[in-house]
Length: 221
Ligand SMILES: C[S@@+](CC[C@H](N)C(=O)[O-])C[C@H]1O[C@@H](n2cnc3c(N)ncnc32)[C@H](O)[C@@H]1O
Image (tube, rainbow, N blue to C red):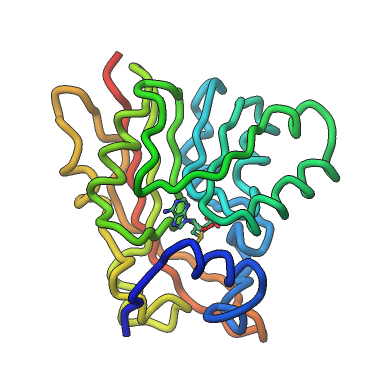
């Protein structure tokens, strides 16, 4: 099955606890949905010097707040006001300088142009929009400052054949190579383009294997 629309209404409903994704699989451990930092983010940013970051499709803000805790100044955008409401409340509860380092912004990534060269890190994790991904990732890549990093994590097509909660969301899968091919090699050096398997526990205690497509590239300075 594929979904007709990953539009604003779909995501607002999902964050309001309505519609598809409300049951098993919604809060798999080891993911930002469950309030845990996505592991590919901590692995891939470990050697970066904090600067400005864009979290494109930030959801309820787990990864944006983690980046801010590491010293990044984060612009965190999402289409769903319901997600941002939760994110703002979490930031407020956290308090302190890290919370102040995140600016929450409602934007539709299918039409919004982030400032060209505006961020040292542009990050997008498990974002499936209502529009072709190539256009989105090209615009996100353009938002990376010279010397900065693009980090994209998606669901690898291997997940179509497993028991991942998103297995039947055929239009959301992509490989890191597909994203890498959008980048002009004269402007970009690709550091990571691979698939990584990891095990998470979904609601109800069942263990499932996810395959993350991980693309990390540096814009030549
Ligand atoms: C599967 S969630 C991932 C959230 C978070 N990055 C994570 O890793 O847990 C996808 C997110 O992308 C957001 N999103 C989907 N389409 C969008 C769009 N067109 N513009 C902005 N955000 C969008 C959704 O609202 C949702 O928060």
